[in-house]
Image (cartoon, rainbow, N blue to C red; front, side):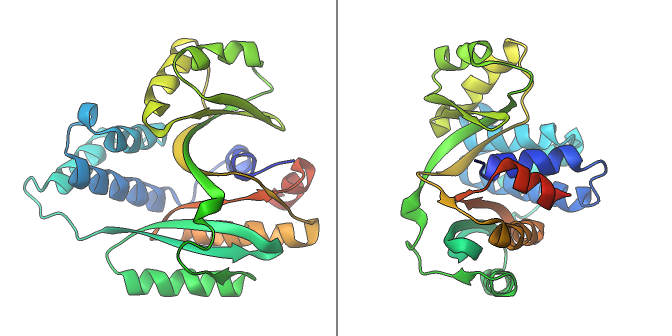
Length: 249
C-alpha cells in the first residue's frame, strides 16, 4: 500500500519536462525568503533556511536566484515581502485528511482558492485542529528501494535516523526535523542517491482509499500543489501502488 511519498515518486519519474519550472522556482524562492526573514540569513545557524536552500539546489535553481531570495528575506537592499505561513485543514475524497501549507501575501485570496479547489474536487475545508492531530512533523528522506537494500541505509541510523520504512518500492528514512540535514549528509557520503528530503507532516496512520475515490483524490492533491500560494500538501491516504501507476498514466 502506498502514500504521498510514493505518489510523488511516480509523478517525478513520469515528468520528462517540468512545464511549471518557473512556478516551482517561485515557490522555492518564497520559502527561502520566509526562512531567512524568520531565522536569519546564515544557513549554518538556521536549519529551516538550510533545508530551503538545499531543496532549491536539488531543483537546479541558479545560485543568483537563491542569493536574491535570502537577501530579500533579510531586508538587504530590498524590503521583505509581507509573506505569512498559513495552514489549512480539510478532507478529500474517501475521507482522507489533508494538511495544506501555504505561503501567501493575501490570506483571503489563498483561503478562497483552497476552499474552491477542495469543493471542486470532492473535498471540504475543516476547522483548525480538525486533522492536524493525525500527523507528526518529521524529516522524511525518500530513496529508490529497487537500487538499495536496508543494509545500505545503515549510515542513516548511525547519524540519528529514527526509522527506515519500506513503502512499496521506496524507502522512507524517518528523522527528527532537526536531524534531517545530518542524516541526508551521511547517506550522500555513503553513495546513496536521494529522491527527496524534506520536513513533512507524516501521517500517524493511513486511510484505505478505493480506486473510485483515488483518482479524484490525486487530482485534488495535484490541483492544490499547482496553486501559486500552496507550498505543501500532506495527506494520510493508503492506495495500492498499481492503482497510483494507472492514475499517473
